[in-house]
Amino acid sequence: MYSSVLRVPTNDDEVSYVNTEDSLISSRTSTETVNSDKKELDCYLSKRTRKLGDHVWLIIGVVAMLWGTGMLIYTPYELLMDQRIHMLPGLPPFDWWLHPPDEVLLKVYIFNVTNSEEFLNSTDAKLKLEEVGPIIYREKLRHTNPIFNENGTLTYTANRSAIYLPELNTIDMNQTIIMPNLAVLFIPSYFYDAPFYMKMGVNLMMSRSKSSPFVRTTIQNYLWNETDPILDVCQKLAPSLVPTKNVGILDRIYSNFEDNVTVYIGPTFGHDRFFLIDNMTDRNGSRREKVAAVTKLTILSRDVEKYGVTAYKYTLLPTTYDRTLPEEDDCYKGEPTLPNGLADVSVCYFDTAIAASFPHYLYGDDVVQNYVEGLNPDVKKHESYVIVEPNTGIPLHGIARSQINLVMKNMRGFNQKMQKFSDMSIPLVWLEY
Figure 1 (tube, rainbow, N blue to C red):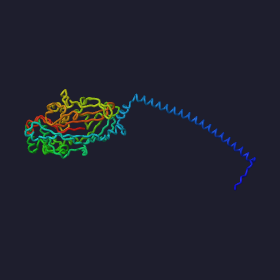
Figure 2: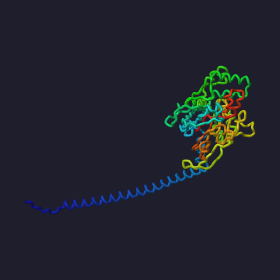
Figure 3: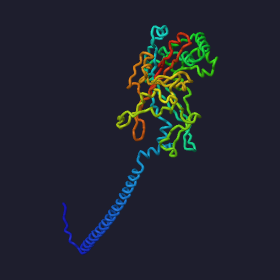
Figure 4: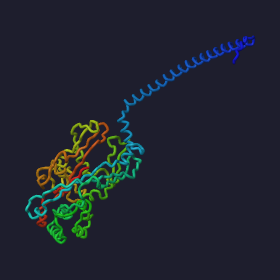
């Protein structure tokens, strides 16, 4: 069993009780003092923070005001253009130019002759053509060896090449086609105004080589590796007239497609002369034939929307390949003078009789459109245009289309087969970039 014991308070207990009460009072006083100090510290920090915040907002306001003032003087467009004009390595304008994206596709369309025998035996008065294509390549553009010159110009080497894209093609490159034999037709067209005895020599040469005005070949060969025995004979007799025995269309376009170019950059020349050519492959200035008609090349068509941006669409004028006045300033008139719709570009092809035009002779004179049968000019399919952002001048989209034609002049004095080609232009291929 438990027993309870009653304890009687003593004097010591009273002293202990008093001491405990004093301790509690002292603790409350200390706590109140600490709390008071904390409130004063919080108040000080709050005032300090408010002052610091005011300073921060003041700085932000000043910076914003300066930025806004700067934007009134230098717009983002001007800043972008100033960055571009300097072409500084490491910055986007220079890097994009040095390593352009592989976005340019080359589409090639060939005109297959469907009545070669009927034309030669005079059953048909005109050639009948059938379009074959597209054959698709990727055009690779390379800019190498950039040199910044002391006079504020930039010198570099430009190179282009065409890379076949099997994944985008549905046409067999070994498909057989019948095409005008360029090796044979180039020669009499070149000597169209030669003395009679020279024409007789050409006739004899063609007879011995047994070459025909038409050739049965593959698409691959016609574009890249076309030749004929007559070129061997010509090269032995007149090497200067036959610089190459390969007359493949694309081979001639891309063979040695390399130029050393010097262009204007920097604030010294300004935006108006930015990237204009100062020198190209040791020839001062642009070729005359490239600048003679530059003022008539494009015309503003209309406002269009591209990628959500309102832009301008520029198209090549329908008269781009027409004759101009005065006649002596017409760099593309040819000899004899070509009709409207054809522009002489023989200087680009070893002085052989080659002319450029819109595809399918779009916008050409009636005489041009009646040379052959089988063409179907269509503005939507055959025009050239570029869509440009109006403020920066950056092209958003564009398509360039042109046709390569063989110009046959008066074949009087040559054999009977050659005379059937007199005074006509034969479409060979047309290209779309």
